[in-house]
Length: 165
Image (cartoon, rainbow, N blue to C red; front, side, top):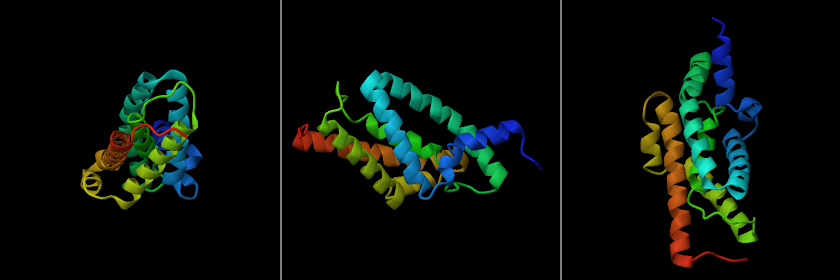
């Protein structure tokens, strides 16, 4: 049965269009999220990012369900909207700078690397969250990876202070 136009649109949202079909789609999705989220926090602050996280999280449930229904695959590698949510969550742990100083840019890079490490290696509680059924499991592991990366970022600030370059 051919998917409806709504299902096709939601599926495209789940994969961020063609980005989900690129080599290393999770890394590509995280990089796109970092660029967008970093730009938003630098220019507009944290509140717009929080609103974006809420909106994308709400949209991601039907988008992931639609893609899974079309492909018959649960948590397919091309679904990368969950990487966007997780990567943006890490950014909430980074104090916003009025200008993109090198220390801030290095911290954004550290947030990207830490998120990808936790998302790829899936230590508990990331692996535990992934076991939730349906779209919730697809999203929850990335949320946990984002939270863990954020905790590492905040702990480094606590122990080492804000590093200036």
